[in-house]
Length: 87
Image (cartoon, rainbow, N blue to C red; front, top):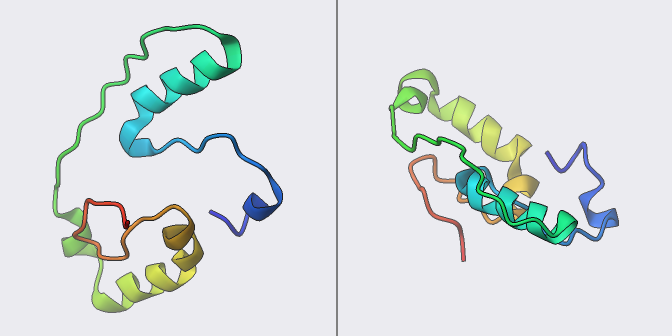
């Protein structure tokens, strides 16, 4: 969450994403330590619909407001059904 991290004050070389955890971690290890290793992180990408069942429109709006800066800085869509990054 960008409110907790002074992200605009730090020059990051790379910001990994949970969606690409294995590939991003492998790249970070290669850049930091010069090692080329396989990162075997088993990630299950499936939609359960839990958000639709648990979050009403007011809750979704509250999440959008709280994390608005995060969505913008990291190019995530504010549409809860979108799986795509914003261009």
